[in-house]
Amino acid sequence: MKIKGLQCKECHKTYEAVALHVCEFCFGPLEVVYDYAFIRANLSKEKILQGPKSLWRYEALLPIAGPPTVGLDAGFTPMVHAKNLGTELGLDYLYLKNDTVNCLTLSFKDRVVAVALTRAKELGFNTVACASTGNLANAVSAAAASAQLRCFVFIPHDLEVAKVLGNLVYRPTVVAIEGNYDDVNRLCSEISEEFPWAFVNINIRPYYSEGSKTLAYETIEQMGWQVPDHVVVPIASGSLLTKIAKGFKEFEWMGFVSGVATQLHGAQAQGCAPVADAFKEQREFIRPLKPKTIAKSLAIGNPADGIYALQAIRSSGGMAEAVSDEEVVEGMLLLASKEGIFAETAGGVTIGVLKKLAKQGRFGRNEVVVAYITGNGLKTQEAVTPAVGAPWTIKPSLSGFQKMLKEVETQMSSPPRRR
Image 1 (tube, rainbow, N blue to C red):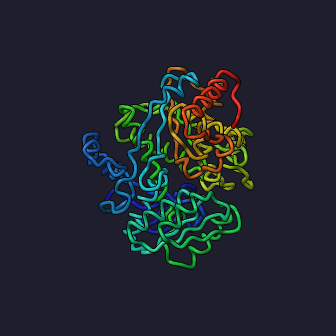
Image 2: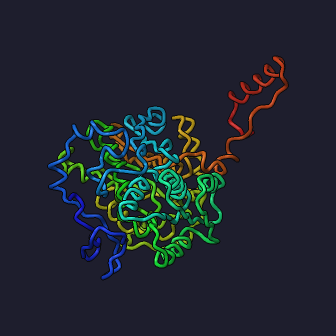
Image 3: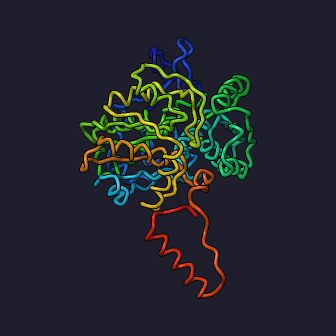
C-alpha cells in the first residue's frame, strides 16, 4: 500500500488514513504519509509519460487507494513562455503556469477537489461540503454534480457575482454567511462535528491539499524535467505554496530531478497579507487580521498553513511580498495585454508581486522563473471594469468609422487616458 496513514506535522503522532485533519493529542494538522520506497519501485518517467493528459498521470503520488473517479480531466494545464511579459520585466525565461483554463471550473481548485472527492467516495461519504472564498465552492459544486453527490457550499455573503453563479448553476445548497472567510470556516468546523459529511477543506483536508502538488509535478515535466530557479505563488491558506515545495522535493526523492534549490516567493494583497507581514517583520508566528482587499480569493486573515508557508519561503531563500489593490488591477491588465491571459484578482496579485520582485533585482535575467496563475478573470470582472473603459459607439457608416479612427490615432499619439 502506498498510503501508510496520517501523521501530525507537530508531534508526529500517527493515525489511520481516515477522515481526520487535526491531531487528537496536540491539535496540530495532519498530513498523508506515503511509502516512498514502494512508490519509487513502481513509478518511472516513462510510466508518467504514458499516463492520461491530466493530474492523474501522477496518481502514484496522490492519496487515493483505488482508481480515480472524480475530475478525470483536471490538471495538465499549459506552461506558457511569457516572452512579452518577460521583455517588460527583463526576464528571458519567464513562464506562466496557466490554471485559468483548468477543467471543470477554470481554477487550480479543480485539482484539489478531484483528489478530495475521489478520496471522500472511497471513505464512503455521499455528501460533500466546503468553506470557500469562491473558487473552491465552484469546483466542489461542479465535481459533486458530475459525481452525483449531495453538496453544500458555504461562502462569505459578499462574493463576486460570477463566483456565486458558479455555485448555483450546479444546484448545490449554497449558504452565504454574513461574515468573512474566517467566520465561514469557523462555522463549518462546528457543522462538521455535527454532520457526517466530507468537508473537503476540514476533515478531508489532508487528502484535498495533496492535489496542489500536481502543479509542481507538471512544472518539472513541462520544463523538460528541470526545476525552475524561482516560483511566485499566491498565498491564501498557505497550502498551495507548501505543497508546491513538497512536490518539487518528492520528484527529487523519486530520482526524476536533482539538486532542487528553487526559491519560493509568496504573493499576497496588502489588505490581507499576514504571511508577508510576518516575513517582513521577521516574526516566527502569523498574526491574524481582518481582510480588506479586492483579491477575495486570497482573503484569509488567519491562514491554516500560514506558518508552514512562511517556513518554506525562508528555508528556500525566497521572499514574501504584498501589493495594493491598485497594483492588483494593474497586474491583471498587464498580464492580459502582454500575454492574452485574463486572470482573476489572485493572478493580479501574483503578477504584481512578480513585477515588484523583478524591479528589486531578485531574479537574474537568465534565471528560470515560473509564476502560478490560479484562476480565470471572468470570475472577478468587477475588479477591472472601471479600469478598462467602454467600447466606441458609432453610426453604421464609413464616415462614422473614419471619424472614430482619427480620434483613436490621436489618442495613440498622446498620453493614454481613460474612456
